[in-house]
Length: 237
Ligand code: CNA
Image (cartoon, rainbow, N blue to C red; front, top):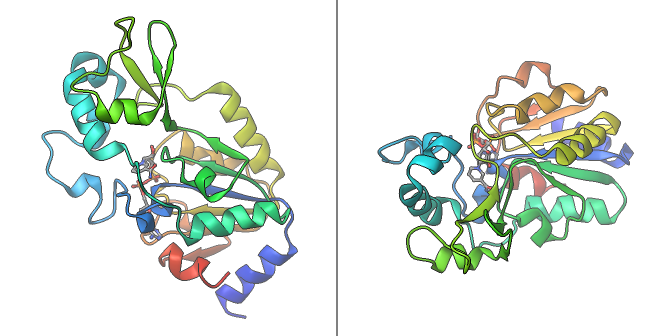
């Protein structure tokens, strides 16, 4: 049986699918990832993205951080693609238990997914670091320089920066979903960012499917691997 047929069979036999997603799920919506040949890493900046969106860089140089963030990290006005939509459909059909995502773009929810665990937060939520007042993403986009609350505090995106810890409740929900999964789909992630990539180790089943254009360090431990574009595969599912 060919690989796609196997995948289709596994999907139809599953009722607790978990999708573990990364930036590659959103490239076909027009949002750049970090590591593809045309990703953010390969554009010319004074520092690599991971330096700029680290906690210490944000503390030292908030002006620069927000300039980069506004230009490159604030993906407003994009629409979900076929992969987001199929995952949402499977949840509505009772087949998919949860999406665990490293993405911060909110596109899974925009496609209709309800159980989405956002390991790295979301650009759609922003809070004043002093009074905790909430601000929408448009406020960050439209502000000049460092966005400030009416109380004077910096309005910080609810996004986990490098050097910052993940939210404990989100970790627990993600681990629980992955442990209980009968089929784990790992989609569009280079699996190089930790601790997120390590979550795969919580899976106990024997149907680990990896769909990613480039090779990943986990290819050898997957039960089925596709080095293809997600749109190509999901348009057939
Ligand atoms: P990454 O390290 O940039 O890897 C993305 C992977 O996706 C690469 O290995 C590509 O080969 C693959 N890929 C790209 N497009 C496709 C496609 N159409 N079909 C199949 N595979 C594809 O991204 P990760 O998510 O692994 O890295 C984690 C970082 C990136 C997280 O902290 C994210 O928050 C951060 N990020 C998020 C977004 C977003 O929210 N959309 C965008 C850019 C970076």
